[in-house]
Image (cartoon, rainbow, N blue to C red; front, side, top):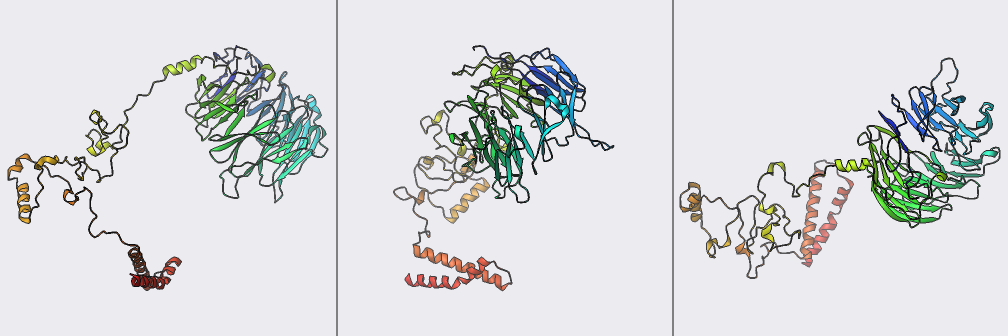
Length: 630
């Protein structure tokens, strides 16, 4: 298809809620009427048909395509809600309240979307995993109550529990997708007993588990099924690392098969936490991001055979596009926000996106666009939404004040055209991008130069720090050669045609070397020195009229030899090895004498100092031997 598929997305901010049409225009859907009050949350149905919004007065259900209001449920104080897979039922959760008369507050309620009728209600105190889980066909629904898994028939909610399974110590349950649903139950370690994951067939709960895996160092878990429901990845974590190697605790990754014919621990060759892992939509492979930064990214098949090593990079997020053709690696949170896009077929990088301050990242249903959003309260500045093409081009920008939520409208994979074999070019950017480019003011180029403290700004720089890069230096050293770099303070040498002379930064320049007509200077006696000083102090003599300031220079002309080299300083001849050894031994004896004086004063010495005193006899013996040999 040459025409781009329109992708709708929704957003929720402090003062606004809206539905935005997809590419290429990204215009708001005018039929949608935003509520006057602040919305608490919104949700699309998994099939993308419905869009619901929670407001203080209740829950409003709209048709997603046309934004027409279909149903309004008068349920105040709703904190969260969720649709069933086919959008038939709506579950809502409110804060649990203790009722004084002893009855339970049933804060988990399930409604029929078409009629608005309340079908059943439960008491659910904890917010974590509050919702009922449905099979993909909505034939069964389960929830975990204490250590018991309760099974319901959604078509007949009035019959109550139709099946149940009690597992002591169970803290979490995850229902698989697919036509043959299974449940994965996690039991954390307790009182020295190892943790375990057990898989049961939903339609035959009373039978023994089809697969079971036990392991230590597992206080909590994260369970992800593949789309077929045949295999599951289990990430186990502990809050504290007993080896003190990681701030994030210890983690392990395991692969289990629902049929029980395969299970193993996934061996990772880099120390550190497991940042993220994700199944490919084709259910045949998965990717893992693990290790201390820079983290390593590996691609495995369903038998945990390594398919490709993407190397190390600063990333902590991995995601496949819905068609399994592209792979996204991102570094968010405390990382810079760089996104790398890889082609799964060639395993080559096709683009890099700079999405700084990203809080939410998501593929579009057609697998060609990426939505990134900066959300509050993660960041309260620069909130907004950006839509990128997979080749890295920015195609849409929307700025929002205090943005809380943003997401694409789900679309079944069958309703989306197949991903092209050749990636098409990027579409034209929307008007928002063009306006942003037009409004962007280019930052003026600031002149580069050496840093100067505020007190020295506006004054002429010392010659010692000049880089000799003006037009006069065209015949000298080339620009950027490094020979003009200033030396340390007090050791800069003023260029004087081969004459070695120390130059003090800030002092006036010395006179040219031919000022004495090439005659060697004559040393002044004490009398001449006094006369010269008197002339300088009194201002008498012919030199006083010129007011020549004193020169801070060190003349080393008399210290040079015929060949121009500087002879060694008298008294600093190099020592032979025996003399060096004698000098070091004398230093040790002097240190031992100081330690003995401390002992005489009653001071307490350390063990190493006492050992040093004990070695005095050996040092003196060695010193005597060296003296005889010399």
